[in-house]
Amino acid sequence: MESVGEHNRSGEAETDTVAAPKWTDEYVQTLHQWVKEQQAELTNKEMANATMYDQSLLTLSSSFLGGSLALLGKVVPTDSRFGFLENGAYVLFLLCIVLVIVSLIVGQRAIARQRQLYNEYRDGDFRDFSPLLRNGYARINNVVNHASGISFVAGLLCLTSYVMCNL
Image 1 (cartoon, helix red, strand yellow):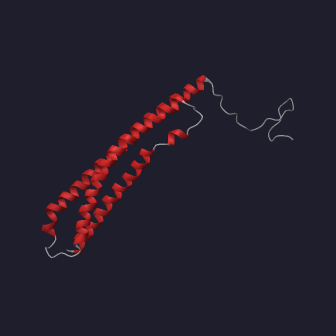
Image 2 (cartoon, rainbow, N blue to C red):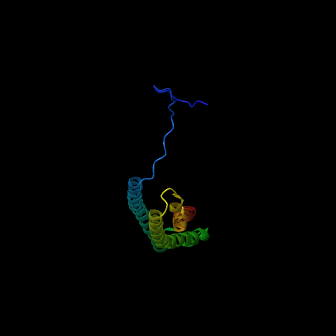
Image 3 (cartoon, rainbow, N blue to C red):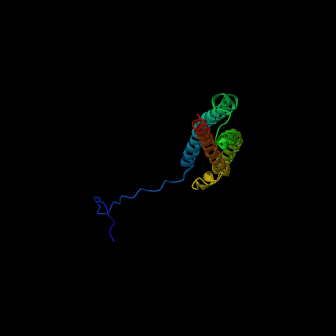
């Protein structure tokens, strides 16, 4: 059976396959250095994004909660309708604040766990990348971050709906 490809001068077939890398010490060191660089880069990006996201949600939720508690009575008449929207907005903004604080705590645990996974990977078999993906704290943190964002948007919608229904 002849392989697909060009024939060289000796008449042997040249195939288009790519050889698998040889796991030499130098290759392993290069891979190890690459993993360390990726770890540092990802950690820096994740921290910057998470900090900005958390600060924004915390600031906005606190502002809307405080502002609505202080000023809503002056804008909306006392015989207002749909009071459940007002109360719902308060609860959702408060929930958002709590979830942001929880995400900060869980996020720190996720980073610690990822460092542990990288250390285990560095000391183990470089061919198996699957241990790097086993970070339950990171998955929990993603869920909490999404929940805090949804809580903020829902609170904002409740507050806006309440004000619009009563003006």
